[in-house]
Length: 412
Image 1 (cartoon, rainbow, N blue to C red):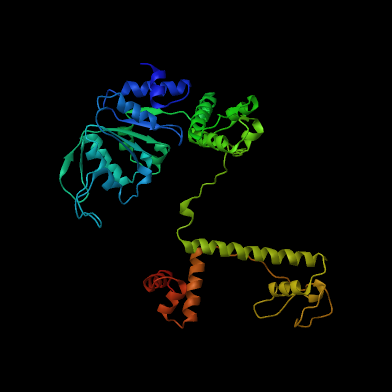
Image 2: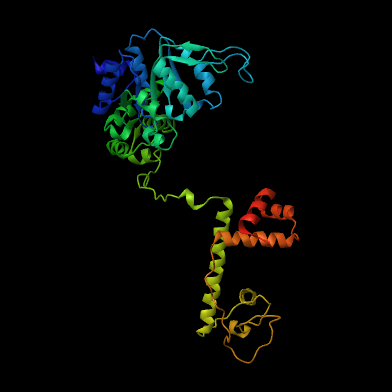
């Protein structure tokens, strides 16, 4: 097996040991019918490996079909993969063969396998285990002999833990794993790829190829390349077209490379316990309680400042606000407005003193959701004179729920 010949045939550039190992595994597994799962970041070049597997297998004269599972809508992917019968759904005007039926005797490459809906994963598992499937809208079992090669750029074990991917399908696909290195892990392969892309674009656009200075090469090798080979190819094409000077220095190259300073820094993540909030109403209650507590703290702070003899001049508008904050439930304003440095209109007269004689007692508020819910229900019933239908509409709940709450809380 000549690795360099395989690279030349399938357009693979690079000499990284990890890349060579991935090619060797692909060629070794090709003569078998084992399922292969190719993993690697997006843009790393995973699409070349299923072609190697197909062309070095006994199925090389059969059909090779590549399917991007992430590009097919969830509602039609079963029809695309397994076909459908006429009248199976709106728009099914005739029978249609799916990819697994068309690729019988060949190889099917399922890219972005992690995007498959769970219902489709069940159908795929049946194909892998029994070599059979059923068209959408049919009850007839169809046999197929297809080699399945899948690829993913997501962490499937994590997807399994999150309930987004079937564990049995993962182990059935992952009979032979092949990992494709990201560009930042391939060392000087980035320079080889840049030269190859520069020559290709020079030939396409009929211009001399661009070259990198030594300092530009260092910049190229130090960049993380989150978009991998695809990103490098796009940047090389931009430089080839836009730059008049064919010798590219470091400063020029930096103009085309996005700033990823801090891109490798860990993100601060705070997990949220979903059990904390059981409904939107509880979230709203919590926000309202916190706002009320803040107002209470503000009132206490202003009171302490006045009591300590701090009497800064307050604008008349702000004095009105402070007066309202301290207005008791019966409308009596307790602190002397002269303490605020500005007269307050309509403030009741007081004895000639400038200290607060009566202080407000601050009591810890109850944050019980049950108590607040009872309070809201009682207020709604009072507002609508006991008419439960109107009270339920006011609260934004159904009348049946209101009946249940009244009975549960024994509200008269």
